[in-house]
Image (cartoon, rainbow over all chains, first blue to last red; front, side, top):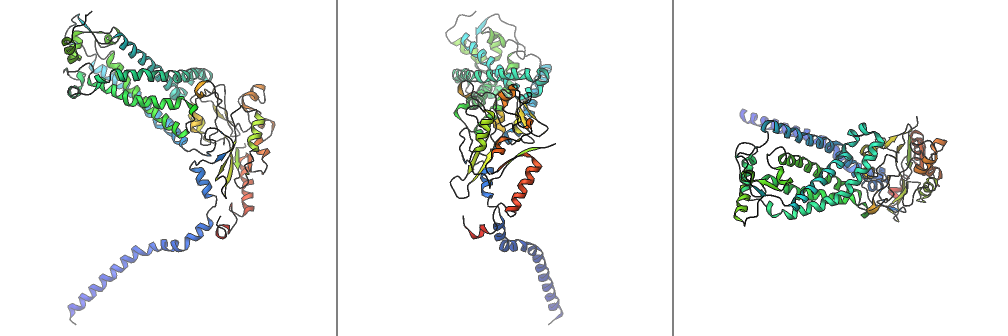
Length: 335
Length: 194
């Protein structure tokens, strides 16, 4: 055998030795699992608590039997309430307050920066009818109900921290009793009003190509452009569809909470409550923007919803396509 | 200071519902409300177990945490009580409670909730001990008389124990030790199939 062959053999041997050592290092520590697998199962089973199955059922909230009849009396533990408590008292209450106050701060800052969006051309003195008397009644009924529901709803969430120090326990309790009653009774009325709105203005709120340009120009709120819009501009359409989605979810979840006589289970109630509170926060935040734009944010906007008529200069600037439509249609007597 | 606790020994409870009846009678609980109830798991199947449950008087009580009008308070004995004059019957404590303890008399249409009612650990409410107003709203205040909750006192098999948590725990531990360290008999799981 030559010297080089011996060297090669040695190299091979040491390489194999290394591999085996590495393999052993990797595999040997795992033998514990094998040991437990073959020896451990029986002893574990023998020592396991025969009540484990009972307690597992209890923990999972399974239904048993109870001679006492009533709402979920046959359930020993319902765990969802704890999640609800943590979500409601924690992130929802915290971020909800930040959301609403944040929107208020942003609107205030925007007003300071941009100011009122003024009419570019002086008032013509000519007006066109924008909202009929019935439309205005519908709007203000819904708006009043919305504000009442928002205030009473927020009182139930934040009153304990904000109002008890002011009114005292008996005082706040009396107010909360009234707030609960108002909220429960006016909720379904609001729902009816909202559904009439959704049906009435559905066709006007379908998105068109015009709305894309409207959003690109920030609705004329930022910059000096005056994007075209029909009777409803892009922003109003977004508000409409928010009401048509989140608003409808808000109403139906509210019904689940409002009528406990149907014996809905706690899990259903809790999910409904979370949907209710989240959609309510969203709508309240949105409504602040809607109120801002409709009042101090835009010159001449509020009179449309109070008197029913807007100046032609305003209509030309904000809803030019709608004005054209009106001019092409058979003329209605103007004021 | 004692820390009051309930414990129900599932190996002893025979689902006689004496605790439920005793409570109802002692406190003149309104129709349709049961402050305590017995739940049977696997009813009618070998190995069925019954547990008597009421308000457990939690340390970090969920009802207390979610109450919009903050009407709950914990006594020095660790008993969770509430003030019916403050309660608005919103139902939140019922949503939050894992044990389903809070209940409401129906008041008005569509199941509108009245003032919440629940187990008081026989400790009444915020009114003067055993005054007419307290008995009317919350039932008897046995703790003020130096007595323990009647449900546990009346328990036919002494499955339900109520009192200072340390004493209750000692009592239960001694039972478990006598039973053989585990709430089962050694070898039975291997020897018998059901």
